[in-house]
View (cartoon, rainbow, N blue to C red):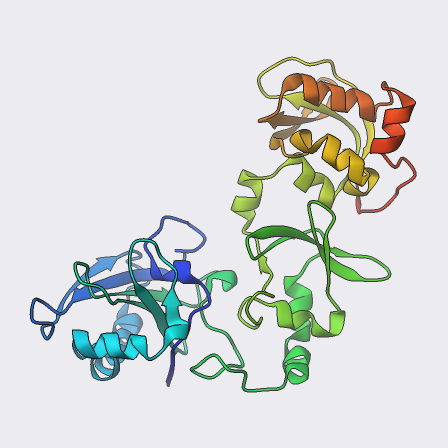
Length: 340
């Protein structure tokens, strides 16, 4: 059994890329065109994962191609007409006029990009093994028909996905929505997604499943940021959103600075004015956390060394009381504790 979907949820699935997380389940892709007269059928296969390109996949792909040759890839004119009749499938792209749609079987997903302008190949088919594809990169959405419309009531969907969502959304982990990064936080009173500037999106526990990547409606998806990406792009501001630092020293990756012991540092400890005043330091990249000569040291890059030193001194109280009171809330005890 399979399902043909005339819409898409992740445009990047339809293009070649080198992102390890996204291409983890990619078996390979097929590139094709209909020749000069628009009625031929030329194609080339590009392998990505030899182990996944097994007998099970080949049998599945052969059946899908038979169907595609009848329903979509009959010839150039027919393919373009199908695309034009489904404007919701159009992919925003500067290089080509493309439409994305996908076929879903029990184990595999075939993401088909059709190109409706002359001078290019006519189509690409990216083939994914769903058993190996990261959940946030799966194109399919549950509880929807082939046109993307919901097949069940939202309350019923929320109940069915509740347990899964509580496992997927973890206190302190980072999630992406509409290009912004949020930290998921749980307190005694509520749970919410919080951006680095303190903006919050409240998430009622009973509807948490409606935010899952393959369930959410457009604009309300919160997908887990892959661990490798989190570590590669972790800033000091990101770090203190998830943990409360105690007895640490901030050091610069290229210059020696005057060290000061930072007894306590968390996102909640900084006031709105403090976050603005020290935004350049909070955006510094964390390159290493290690046990150094003075104890736990957090090495930062991409920030002026004097600004990092001044921030450390201010946190240690070696600054004017008037300014420190504007920047820091020393009474705050929010956030999970992590003694370093």
